[in-house]
Length: 326
Image (cartoon, rainbow, N blue to C red; front, side, top):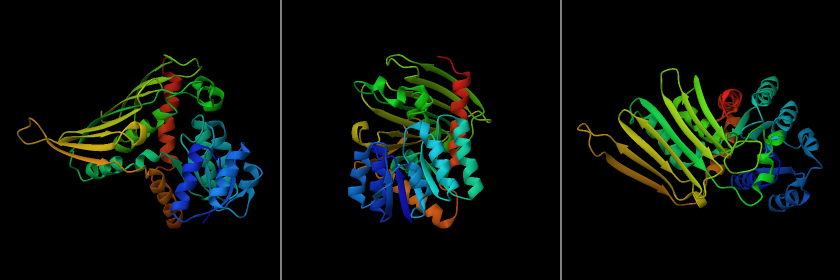
């Protein structure tokens, strides 16, 4: 397939590197900052489109990665779909549920495949956890517990993520959406949503911390905290069943070595049997996610983490913003 990339910042560059690693042809790239587009074009051999509309209309592109700030995710994705292109749109697929639904409607109109960039599903520790859960080794799942955070940087309050008009929300939409997506992937749809949103530190009109308690129809619980005031970057996700527990820590890089610890409950209970895996190598989730998307297109099937999954996550987020407190 011939690919196009709209948005050549950090995430767009990661997507470009993943496509190159998989041997795909990147035909066109574009960015509002010309230097960024030029940099990706040099490393990929792509041509530079004048703007995103030109790229969406091009007959030389089969699939598009949309890696922009939130306010442009939906309109660009919809335009690409209306021009019969498959789309990987970065999470959370828009500023709100209506924008995400517009993408789903366009995909249905044109029978195109849409994947949403929830790359955390493709981290090796999470993939291994999914394998263990699917094998039934944990027994019936009871709850998940997740924490995810970083501390921002000097001038963070002036960036687009802290502008409600551009982002649609704060940390809940940013790192929090990854936690909600993972919780949904393991537990299913949430019927009860309780939340507290706080702006503790950054001078902004969006939350820099979100605290969520989500429950399924059968009483399983997800207890989640996402924060922009975690001064040492951290990621922790635990899955607890009647027969054992999985603890995922780290994502590599500044988040620490990625690991999975399996605590297997013994018949006599007491101290569990413990097995631990570590993945000290570089983050391959971007490559694996792009590989899954390309395979889904070739096989004409739903990709893992598609627009319908994103709608489930965005429905929770929309409810929090409507009913949560600040």
